Image: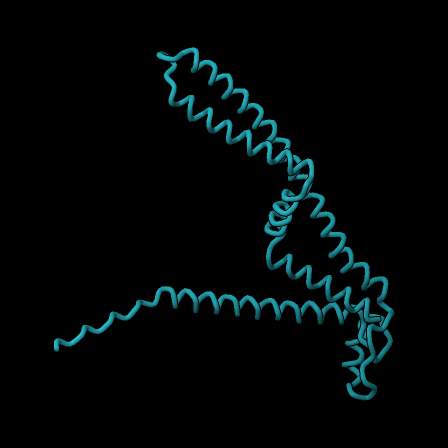
Length: 204
């Protein structure tokens, strides 16, 4: 069943990537992408940024205005400042509530689509053979382990396939991380390497 083999591999790949990058980093990235889409929340976020610019401009002008020499202007700016600050706090609370709901939805979806699949599929297909080992190639204890816990003898069970996918993907991620670190170190060494001074021309 190639589709089930692929589902298990993709599920383990997603889990390993989440563990490597971190759920918070992924949530932040998806949140930024979501705010670029034409949704009511992205419009509200744009309005909040516009109002924040207005607030900073009024605040700057208020600080530059004397409350004694220009009291009327100062009082007007003060009212605008307080009103904008109140609106910003309301919008901030609204956006924070939306972000909390967004993170909760992502966490639930990620848990169901990864951890749920990780537990459900091995339970449901525990007696199914993912694929068969070549007959007579391996000793009994190898065939027993490959079919653990309840798959037919001589086959590879879904649990063992899941373990193999997890191990291989973890090694691939470690190798890719090490390669990226090596390249980054080499690049930094090239940047810091001093440029040799040109030899002075000999007097003719």
